[in-house]
Length: 435
Image 1 (tube, rainbow, N blue to C red):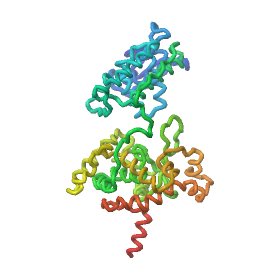
Image 2: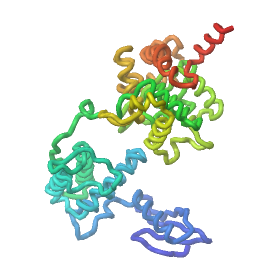
Image 3: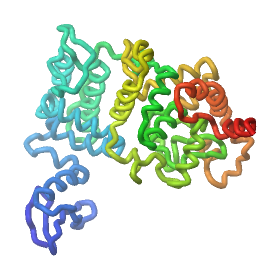
Image 4: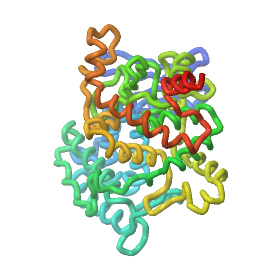
């Protein structure tokens, strides 16, 4: 191979018109080559830098003159490598944004021996609104003592926590002899139960307006499934044919092949109610075990989808179709509680169920307690000797929710939309009665 450019122990090389990345693997005692999907040297350099982040030994990022007191920027590579394996792509991008916005400008050249004062200074700057995003689109609702918008205390705690965790990992890896700094106190941190809701309640009439505002079939299917299960919108968009058990009348949002580690939120089992069975049956017939919510044969969850933008467009379109009376009553307008968004559906769904079913039933469908892998295998795995009677007994809380949704939830929305929201069984009963 012809050497083009050398970057440390890595080499960009060319062979028969193709560009390769070559390096010495000290553990395997051999030279490794990988073809780069690049046609120009600049593209090859960019891909090389990205690949190096995952394979470079974390000690290589530390300069010889740093000794046992490296800078925060030098120990960051190890933390990034560790988090790349643990975090979802969306959460990892959030970590990268924090690196660019806060760590590089304020901590990057600080040595481990000075990290304690540096973190306290960073917290003080954030609390006084001296350090905050410059992005004009950022909507900071928390105000500093001088009246200027600043980051929320919970956000500050998350940012500082990541920095402190990176220092602790560096100490654990032997990259520094200095102990990690204590996490500075951040005033105003709230527990999950005390935090402001992300969206306001939504009425049945407003829900009907959103349904009527759907112009594209896959968006209508996504909205109806979300209304039916009250799930987090990302989890609803991730539904595959394998997760649906129409014979039991449930969707296992956990699905197959999931490793239950480092997950902050439990994934629920939700009932199939109202128009969901009709929608899911048709989608499974089309897409099989794959992703069910698709747009032009592309899974909606795989693309760069902005869920907030989708619901905002629906709300804007629904507002245009309001009657004068609905405009006067300010349907779909923001209130002191917030805007109408995806979380509005989840919040209304949970609180509406609260006075109708048991706490265990709500927790089961909202994903607020763990359903073990063993129980899931008994319920959903092919060939399980568990009888249907036992499965339905285990699914009792979920089926309790299903009955209430079919009897009250969907019928309450139906008067405000032309879309048929009846369940398959209810539709057959109505047809038989008419005949």
